[in-house]
Length: 159
Image 1 (cartoon, one colour):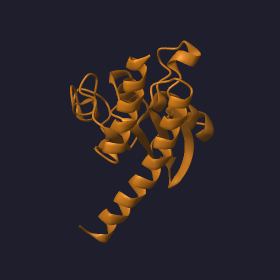
Image 2: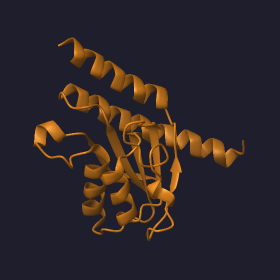
Image 3: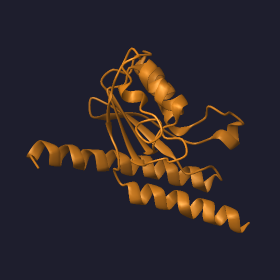
Image 4: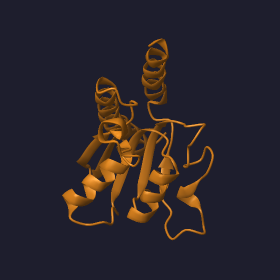
């Protein structure tokens, strides 16, 4: 592993920990614990967590909300130069937004065997039929992200 790869790995873990903090906030609100952070030029420009129940909004996924907030913060719809960190592999809707927003990269924690669209069920990030491709790094702090989800759903089933 090169020094640059070690640095990128440490940076990815740093920002994924912020996304995990957002996921924990979602759980405290009774939402599915998924969090996201958008980083541009090394700086966090937006953070969000799931709010589907709170907002009664099917699009209120963590990464979707974070990308919308990042666009507003940056004053542009194109999120070129940005990396989206999210604790769970994005679904088709969110991966599609990443294509449309022209993100450079997505880093996610746990894979989603029921809806993952960045390699598990589909790979929207590298579909040559679409007008944009972006890099994907998977499995960053995956165990921690998956454990948050398992704990949340275990508690919900007990109720």
